Length: 286
Ligand code: MN
Image 1 (cartoon, protein in one colour):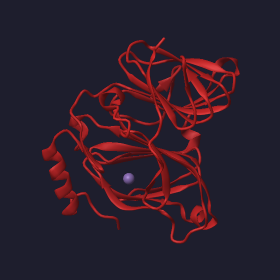
Image 2 (cartoon, protein in one colour; image 1 turned 180 degrees about the vertical axis):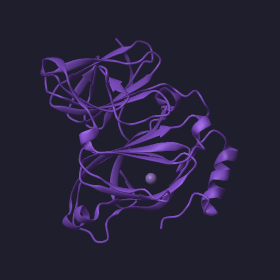
Image 3 (cartoon, helix red, strand yellow; image 1 turned 135 degrees about the vertical axis):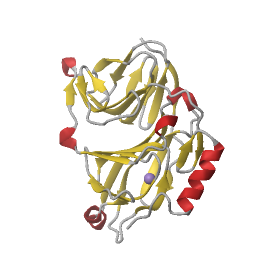
Image 4 (cartoon, helix red, strand yellow; image 1 turned 90 degrees about the vertical axis):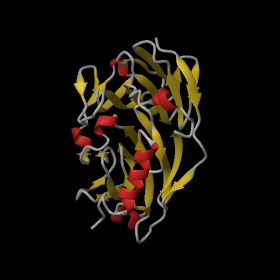
């Protein structure tokens, strides 16, 4: 069984734009290569927002060199980007946006949700791209709830929504550039399950709500366990009804140079990204 290397608590709540109260699990915990290919995990909410007009959120900003994955649990988020893609991400939906060579986008509370006010709960995960794909064309996968298969665990232990990768032979809808799994778990209190993880993958479990045990470590809301790369099986036990994300991925093993919304392999590439954004080469919002 994989061992837990370390457990982590989030940094203090900070605002992203004026619409997302988030707790960051990484990179604030400086996990580096131990969590590659994942770069960032912000857990937003659950937070109540009173009615607002215009909608709260994050205005026009760029990304280059990686993918942003938005998983919504409660509330509704509207997205619009310079590649011409737009969509609404509601409860159970996932947006998998490949920024790659660069996009400019905005992420706002969906208009009707903003007008009515309500609770927002979502995760944004950044997935790094290997050097050979960092300058690929941008891509956008809108993955609605109905397209995400749900696997029922044995003995009533809970369910696994397979967003990316595969679980017990069931493939998730997200196309990825490198081997990885994103599993959205609901574990029933008192239940437990074992999960097969591909050999050599980094892996981490993040509790969104509830309480779970990984080996001798206990995790509460917004806490994370990082597992040893050794071994191909890990076990999670729910001490109460618990929602978790389980991430596994093959480490990229490439240098990471990050500067705000740009994640490249060298400082020179970051310099070029800033120049390309400033000169409009990543496009603009219509
Ligand atoms: Mn963004």
